[in-house]
Image (cartoon, rainbow, N blue to C red; front, side, top):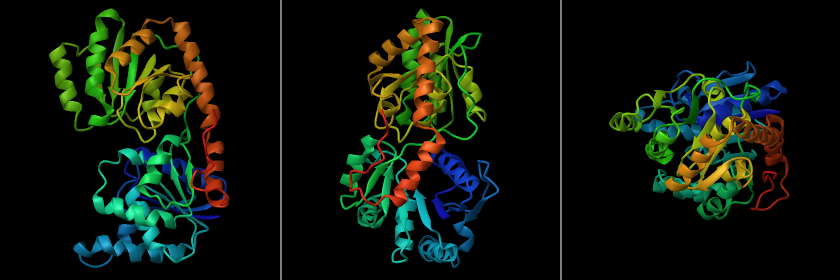
Length: 375
């Protein structure tokens, strides 16, 4: 099977890591995978790729003056698609999806495009890209979103879409086994992500500050970087909690950090699919999550495998965290074991690969799709 996989870049990020996981898995099973970075110049790849994955930068094929190059992507990608002669085409992210559908129009290739954020909250999309998505998505063999909750917004954004599926992210390559028991030392509540407004880390700092006197043996650690980190650091200093609220920056070993924590919190207003929460659950951490669009409700099976609180409700978030931090180690371990067993059964790589295979081969289903997550 020859697979042409189109992404924006491989410089780092959740979509790129999922792309690497899928590309490597297909290469290991014997498929010929060509992974193309369409919206970046040549650079380093942040993720290890199997030797069977051919990595290309579309920028290397662009000719002409700089002002022409955005338009030159279409004939360059069309020529590459003809050259690769793929059996399957997969594209990630709205801008790449639109480019892929325009460039391959009329070639007879089965193109599956995947949204990597919740279409109902894609506030940064330019109007022309929204219009192009509405116009081109009906051409796709199938459109994929990450959660069932994202399906109705996608149908509103591109109402002519013929076939739509919800396929969640798989657990990544190399994820350690779920831990057996809590680590020693001071108790750590972990959060992980980019410091931008939708993660609501500043609100999380305030919530933890209110709980800190009741739980003197607990610290909050938020790993990540981004534009709001400095503001969070200043607020932590104003609260006098530098020793209790730690913002160490981006970690190169996030799984090691999670394994050393005693609980995980997701405070976001919006998620595409919360990879950090998935991995925390798989590693055996008890989790508290905002019931934001989209992902936490499906990951937690409607709150059975993690505590869900209304998105933006800081009082409810504080109450759920208070319960987690007040609980016995045995209670937290049991919560973590149940979460790990649940997500490892539902989001294992083999299971998710089967859903992607069906995205190309199963053409019997209409717009409501078929790849619903099992309860």
